[in-house]
Image (cartoon, rainbow, N blue to C red; front, side):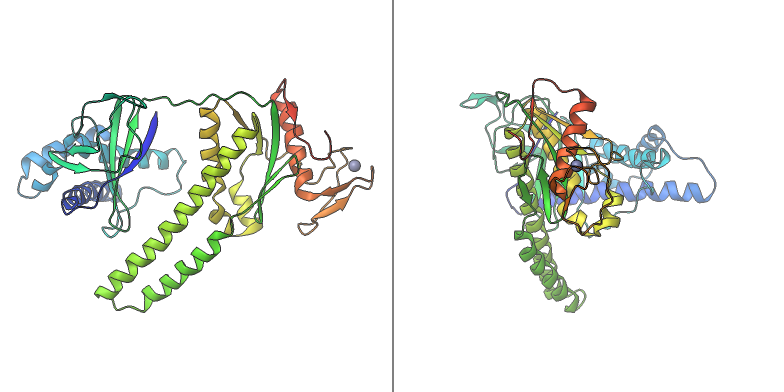
Length: 384
Ligand SMILES: [Zn+2]
């Protein structure tokens, strides 16, 4: 599965899409309300199948009340119910802490279609291979133009339309296309320690700082938020301030994503096997506070895994309870360290350590022994 997102051109006709997202929204809220009422009356949960059947009956029995439901492609409407059911199933299986929530109409929403809902131009043999090179798509009978940043390859499985907080529409296209860029192997393996100030420390001694560009953008976002709160409710000024606020946040998100992709690409180019500690987000939050979510380790690792898969590389995680920070990597002596001890000297073998580099080296050593990687050089600072 391969997902690409395209931005639709801004056009007055996009209001049709807005209406369709709104309908998807009402279906979600209607059935969620129903499930909650049933729960409060002590009735059992309605399964996806039952919701789907009820959807058809309601649409037929009360055409005056649910006329708008017909405007949405029926597969897309059922997909909303499916999403709702998945949300509940995650809650029942204790993967999610809370059941699904009502969606605010202020917030953007999306809908997903199967091939009955959209139509692209016929694929042709272009300069990048056989695929769709036209920037037009027909969605439920109306044609829209989008920014074709790259051709669409493979068979299209689903198309999702989503609006962002600024009123721009995006289209995510899922295809069965397998993209691979197998590169010659470098024969290197490395371990990485994650941190706040230094985002990643590599076992070869290189440190990747957290991006500073974000602080500037965040100040602006904070200022925008203050501006927003001073404006009168329901006024045009407030609407404009809200847009400005949303634009600032979108910029932060995009800058972060861009940085993540570039870093991920650099790392998979340099190493064949990359070892990390299993992410313990709760523990990290206790240690460092809210800043953890600003860096987005989880999102970064997801991108790194994707890049690695595409290039035939490997990302592996070692057990989070393995001591990595408080062990000397030369002689394996355990010592007790405070968080503020950035450098220390081992009392047993007299090696002087940088805290993060030592941790990263321990991660690559533990990783190499647990996963039994062969034919790779371990990137270790100070040894060559
Ligand atoms: Zn030592």
